[in-house]
Image 1 (tube, rainbow, N blue to C red):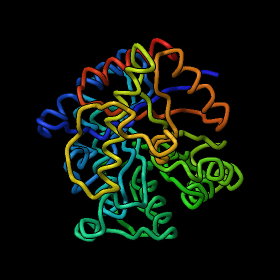
Image 2: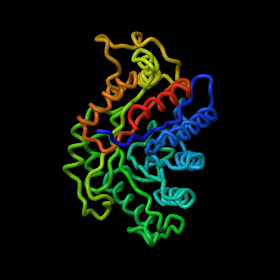
Image 3: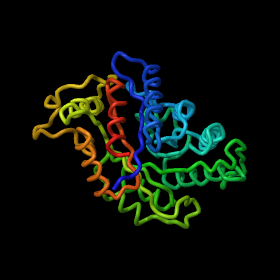
Length: 329
């Protein structure tokens, strides 16, 4: 049943802390994850968000790679409409040349921000056909020739690096794109669970191993899940309220840094349930979390899990990683 475990890090900033503090804590966690045997760490691009410092993914990846030895590092992801694809090829080709075969490039079509900020960042189209063409060009820039497929532009710094490309998505639309391109699919089920089962099925049904862009022979799904492991179920549930409060802030339009944990009962819905956006989760003592992870793998058939853990105190997150590794890896 055991599948590889990876980590999605959004470099959170707690109340009373700074972006500098958040980045330093993230790098400490990367060292720990590397030692514990996690498969990869990805950083997710976000902008105009006061509680997250994960805006410049390439810089975070480079720093994390410099303080680790084995673990893969990547983007989960680069929101491609915010960037010129050539610049992405040059950045990730440079990372691969500096740090070797440890770099992944996960690509998404969402802006990772509000529409005003997206307009300020916009450099390429999010339309499916344009997105697919950008991926094809990126593969050209990562190939031995270092030349895009649609334009005679050479990227010497990325040539021959063959950086693996992933497609990120949360719906059947993203799943279909990933499948038709023959690329691995990373599913954002940790915050968008509504189309989880349908998206996985669409991806597998549409997978085309002989597509010009294909990089794998069979479908490969990495699914996101919120995880908090603590000594007891009660302690874990309390720590999990940090992310629950963050999502409530988003829904209410409230802009705050991460808040301390609270009594879970104060956040429960009318029926005692939590936020439905966060229902894909494994929260509890080690044995509880192991059972929940096994159930999720059984349900999805995921080839890999990417875990998301928010904590007001970075030491709580690091302890959760340690307990998770002890029970799963």
